[in-house]
Image (tube, rainbow, N blue to C red; front, side):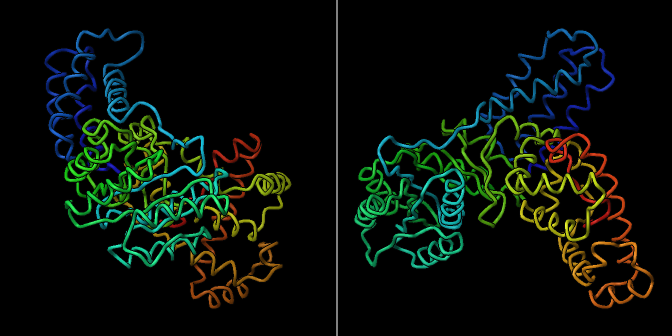
Length: 445
């Protein structure tokens, strides 16, 4: 996410290294590079100009006090401006006092709109809500089938009818939601390859009828400024309440994320970071700004861990580690939990400095499968007491898992190292353990 922008901003800010003060001359040189970095990232021209002007106004003439270095001060100013550009505060979903609350989701075809509906439904259920998905893309049968399939996957009901009247379907869905105690309905509307009048009239009629508490527009971040232009066109007709940016895990320059809030005047509420129904994150401007500047996002990483780690299991695991009873069975459970959190490359992006350090390193999530195969090829006794693994046992495990004896030896060494590391970490208590959980060095990449 934002890799190119991050790299170019870092080069621009390097100009202040070794400088004693911030002057008109050195700030001007850096601002030219910052502006170029923003434009290369496909940030809106007017947004980039205002950003650079604001940074200059705050930087020039600012006293560098104490042990603070000019480069540290300019990084802080740039970060603060990025946070402001991105919306300052995280914006939550708004619900109506009367049930069901209606969330209408709009966007172009292929933007990830239907998948987002399912992601949002699962997210809201985790928070105690009872969502209902509503299929109102009556022009594309595949969209209805997709929503039904996603609903089945996450075990959330989907309301649909054999009708071409999207407004009537939505009205009937509200009645259904009231009858079956569904407190929020998520309406998937029709998408097109481009904006057209028929589509805009239909979503406008839906909006007037449903009077949704939230109207979210799903933007494909990979199409850059076109995403911002499209969002503005929808906002002019629908009065959007929020933006969702999808495909930020792809080869995107990220300019849409930095422009859309300013151009449309509405907050980004969620970002999609993958195809899986769990790959949805609330949009935190301060955290995204830190990630753009290569500072990582440890808070989000810990939140991801806490969502997947069961508290009772964490307590039992910590107790096992303290008593030196951590086994390969426990290790296997931790691998499964970490896999649920996302790809290792994405997880490393949350750690300060890791994006840069791992830039040219190949990280293979499939390595997990090899590790699992090796562990599952062990007997129960071997997983509990790896010390009994002599040469012949290791050869049998290698043959059984389709790996080599060297692979088995490497895993045993990594397991031993990780056991020692986790034992040291666990001395800080469960909260510290959760914040410092890790993988053995070299596994997966």
